[in-house]
Amino acid sequence: MKKKVDVIIIKNNLTTGKKGSVINVARGYAFNYLIPNEIAEIATNKKIKHIQMFENIAIEQKETSNTKIQLLKNNIERVGSISIYKKKGENNLIFGSITEKDITKWINKYTNLLINKIQIKTLDIKLVGITHIKIQVNLKINISIPLKIIPINI
Image (tube, rainbow, N blue to C red; front, side, top):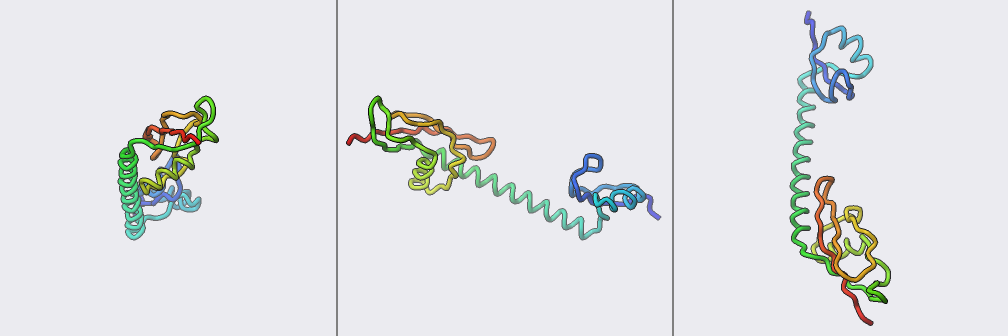
């Protein structure tokens, strides 16, 4: 009779380990504590192969998302500047303000890139001139692009 048995961790646990990991523990610990409390299950060849398949799928998805993010970053960097035309009032003020929705419409119209308005970080823009906006591609990558507000005289 074996003294140790392999089990697969089902739940994240501080003492036993990370979910999906295979550990070798004593039989009594496995059958009296881990399995009845649904913290682990017995490791079979099929279950181990199943876990490795999901790990491979997760790695592939991470790689494809990284390439998509890199392509999006390169396409956004190609945009030299954004020019938006607005009516001009007194003291170089424009009527209304420039919102994230205006910027996403411009980017979608001229570059065919789909950017969510949540990704655009701007302050309240109400003056004619050049300001910089930040586009957050992901948590680590921010791109700064000049925004030119050009007045239209009526």
